[in-house]
Amino acid sequence: MPDSGSSPLRPSPPAAAARFGAPAPTFTHGVQADPPPAPPQASPVLERILCGPSGLGTAGLSLARRAEPAAPEAPAVPEAPAAPGAPADALHIPGLYYHPVAEPDPVRVEEVSRRIKDWAVEEVELYPEEWEGQFDGFSVGRYMVACHPDAPSIEHLMVATRLMVAENAVDDCYCEDHGGSPIGLGGRLLLAHTALDHLHTTQEYQPQWAQSLHADAPRRAYRSAMEYFVRQASASQADRYRHDMARLHLGYLAEGAWAQTDHTPEVWEYLAMRQFNNFRPCPTITDTVGGYELPADLHAQPAMQRVLALAGNASTIVNDLYSYTKELASPGRHLNLPVVIAEREDASERDAYLKAVEVHNDLMRDFEAASAALAEAAPAPSVLRFLQGVAAWVDGNHYWHQTNTYRYSLPDFW
Image 1 (tube, rainbow, N blue to C red):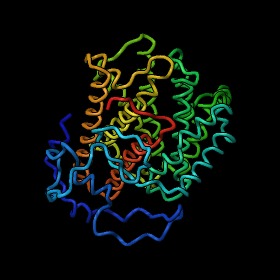
Image 2: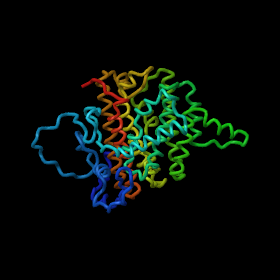
Image 3: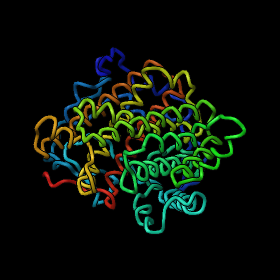
Image 4: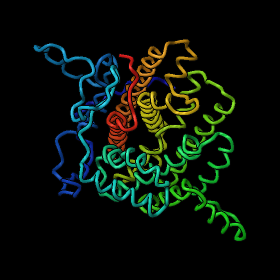
């Protein structure tokens, strides 16, 4: 596939902004406000996409001519400064390329957090009492509000939040530290997947399958979250999500197979697995959560598929970087990009971690270049808004990892 940075498409931000559709609704303390008049230019997130990547080492990747900044008169900013809007105790990885986001609306965060816990405890009986602290520490309400700033209502946010929690339940209980095992993983994932993509069988066996959807917490969560999702989504959006969840489960199976044989993949093989075992199902539903639809033919375009793949890949390497010490301290052996680089490229732990930061940065810059090229090539309002939503999700995902000091800490490499 050609490098997106070599695309001849060079968007002009003012022209692209003029083609951008009506702005997303604005909210004041979680309540939808009257829509503002159309702005003269695109939103900051879309403006950033259309201008291409920025920051140290990205001048050669610029997709639009930008004015050179004036020479600074003050001393240079110290390395790895606190991101605007991030709490003082937020984690900072030197050299990591990301975009800070504003603190999510606390009223929305509180309401989503309350509703998701009620759903987890009362509706699907997701976890035993002793896991409550871990559930609260996940801070899923803050996560989803940060990732979906254009959601028109709390219920739209809840669609994404239930799916996120259900996906994590499957990962934790089938694959990871809460009873997970690679042995028999394929069978468990297949049966769980039928909660998303229903079994169509004979009348004799249909009741047994339906009863099986309540057999364990992951299947109960998948079944319920999907029922809520299809009420908001079109048939095309629901089928898109099922497809991306099948991709996710394929990635789980590859990682499980390597664990069974104690195999450390080559770096490129690990990255191939991570293109499937990654966050892609989350940004792919950004239009459903936003209350609109990217038409199926536009979503299926190879250029859009590349944008989504790169967004998922970059976001997942963020997880590898922030969860590095957490996984090293967990029982068993966990594959992540720094671990694979260290073993396969005979690097020290520090050098492998820094190489993983470089891989993430390359993926982010390719994602932004591919997004800018697509925005110029297909400037339909739904495409531009979807690209904006995916970029907001990528930024919100980083924000959540950076600020979730309950779950994450950084290695002492600096």
